[in-house]
Image (cartoon, rainbow, N blue to C red; front, top):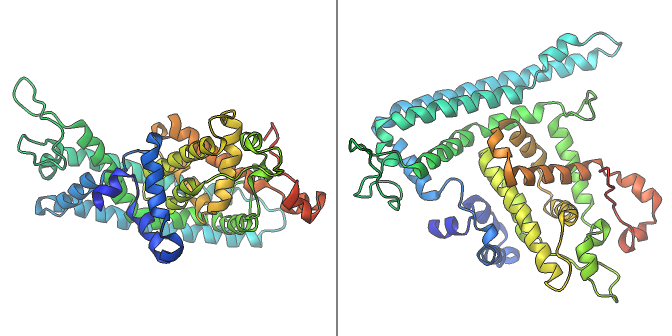
Length: 386
């Protein structure tokens, strides 16, 4: 089972959630596996590899690695204590702001409202980098990083490379997997405390001082997404689907977004920024795959203008309850190199889709069209400036 999950790039946490309602979700897991197997662009290796991560955990269980385990445990306890202080501080500031309604200067309050999320991100990234260097030099991880010709490494598919003096070189794949495993391990321990701080922070909007916390805004946005479940591709004017619809059909063809929805819903089960970005990347690629299949080979291929509204539709159908916090988590905690390339582009598009939903004025739009029109011909337009 472990090898199958790794091969098909499926996290156990997200797949196991399907069993909560076996009757309705019986074929969902198999359809996701078929989708990933059919399209090579969706076949990305899990982060980290399950075999390497298992070897990482087994190494930490060795008596010689006790000092590393104690160091990680001490750091996680420090983060927990710091998070408690940060949340208490933000709550005190919020109480003081409600009392100061007569135009008094709040410079001290603004100074105290420094972004605690960024402070935690700096601390955790620094600890991970320091611990990674310690592990690379630690005897307990020698077999992990320097697989010998007897195959003692977590995956003996990499031949030993030796220098002129006969010393083995560190396995590059193992080093990368060690970093990914360490990140997953540390963030899995600290993520709850980090999210507590992020949810307590004030939401920034248009440069104005918002009185709502991330938690309050996130709950409102989730309710809003639930209220928009009537939205279809026709409302979003997805041009490639419109052109592929038959002349006798007044509506756009629907599109199968089950794979993208699954990836969006799996974000809350991921621990590290690297894992979340891969889920976002796969969700973005899933949109392109779904559009290509829906449009067929005889029609114009979908373009960038089709991807964003389709991604909006996928977010509405997935309506992940913790998406705002996850996006803020990636913004603060992901290293800059992770936000470059295709993953960064996918993350930017997801932020754009989420922002569109956030700024959509449902009441104002309903005032312009009849209620029946929302189901017939009305659209939720995305202007060029948006």
